[in-house]
Image (cartoon, rainbow, N blue to C red; front, side):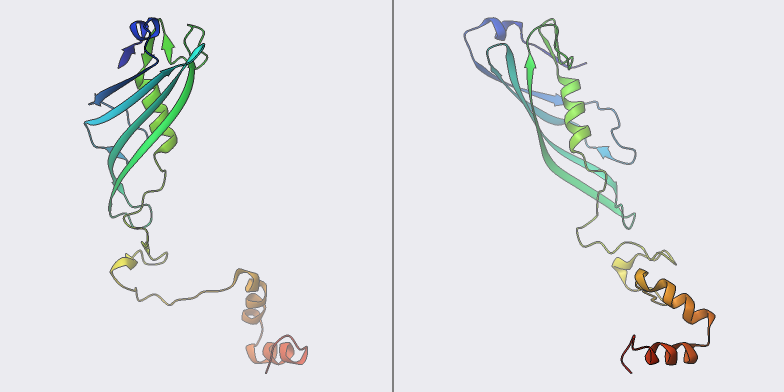
Length: 179
């Protein structure tokens, strides 16, 4: 457990302090996302009347698979979270106990809230063909492209179940389409 001893800071005349911690071990937050270690966490703490304001920032690089095409994907982003934490031992969040700030709990919460659940290899990723599974980023597949408007499914079913010529004449007669 990584923790910071705030007892000296809380009793001092200083109102602000900063820390940098190197993170070398981390639980797996989302299956399939591997955070590159080590990385640095910056913590800024400011004393208020009965609490401390804590800002945690970190630059994270992670490896994953693209959610659309399953190719390797790289995530590199900065995350920040801010808390107002009571300095008494009755802190509801459990971030401070006996004057020790639980950095692991703050980092866990920051990454859990900020790491995306969908990671793409690139923003314009086309994904995989839903029929044959070909990666559409490398070219079109040979599947017949059949795009139907979901609002027209009942009409399409009607046409499939009846003679198309008869159904088309019926639709034209009733004025539902232009001839």
